Amino acid sequence: MKDNNRNLKAFTVLFRAYQTIQDATKRDLLQYDLNQTEFSVLEFLYHRGEQPIQVIGKKILIASSSITYVIDKLEQKGFVYRKSCPKDRRVTYVLLTYEGQTLMEEIFPKHEQKINEIFEVLESQELDTMILSLKKVGKNALKQ
Image 1: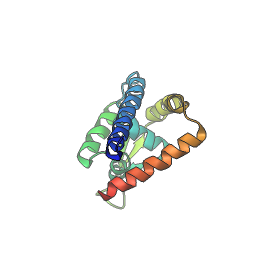
Image 2 (image 1 turned 90 degrees about the horizontal axis):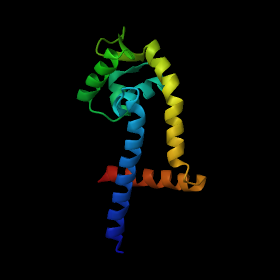
Image 3 (image 1 turned 180 degrees about the vertical axis):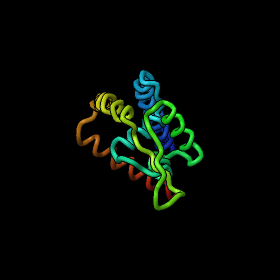
Image 4 (image 1 turned 60 degrees about the horizontal axis):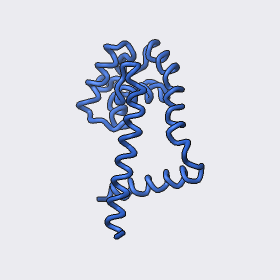
């Protein structure tokens, strides 16, 4: 097989694996009436505490126009609230509510277990190699 064909094969395998993993985790989150973007925001706040809206969007890789919508939906569900920055009126923080914190304490360990089950087919060294390889490809893609 030519290298170009191997590169296309690698891309296809990576893309399909990502989709399959995403589908598995998506099914898991639907039972809590959350989509993956909402869960990503909750997970980020759960681990990092209050954050400016702009930082959340950048860290979980969603457009600034979409982050407001996602925060609105989470606010309607009672999982987050907004707090203005007293020093800079342009900055708004997002925090988990008690209900949001309680939800994440319940579902994050289950989510983590699901991820562990997905990756349990890899030996430790294979996982390390995969992480390094994907970082290398990702950094190279940034240059393109």
